[in-house]
Length: 255
Image (cartoon, rainbow, N blue to C red; front, side, top):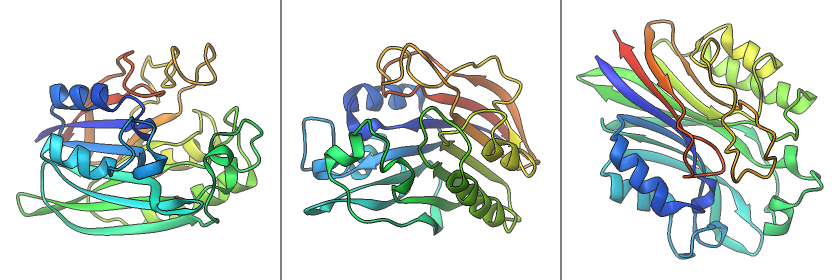
């Protein structure tokens, strides 16, 4: 069975219409998405919506969302990860990687880096039923360092993800904005238990060279990992502006 998987950071809805149109045109089977927000966290003009509910409605997909980071003074405004699926989601698991207090918008977007590694983080595991068979679609937003580099905190969170991934006995696909690069401890660790489809690709960056705050520099920090029984057929990273990251599109063969 061949499926299309898209990894994309939603950038808090900054390019909401463009991202919806792109995802509709691609018509994927699965999406892993980070920086999925509600209300006052949103960078789109509508501050009264849940991006997860908006995407679910527009794309007509099943899904799961977990918002753990909260906006100070606005308890209904959250920031987190989502998984979307053409197939029913029968169970979900949230693995907590980091818990912290609510942040202000200034703290979240500030350039000082004071709160980069303190932001709430988790791994979201949506368990999917495909023709009666179970598989896992996971979404991970790695601890933020700039430029991307190994720290005690990034390694600690990667160890938690690694330990959880070792418990999965069914086929899985993990998509993530890992805020880590090839050769890092985080990526190397995950590559010991999963196929890193980015490893031998010709992709050199997944940060958007036109709008990401680090431009014109660029880094490959968005990844797709699969269980050993899933094979990569093709991979593309179109240079389009639907986020401050570029979307990663993989066609995968599930046995």
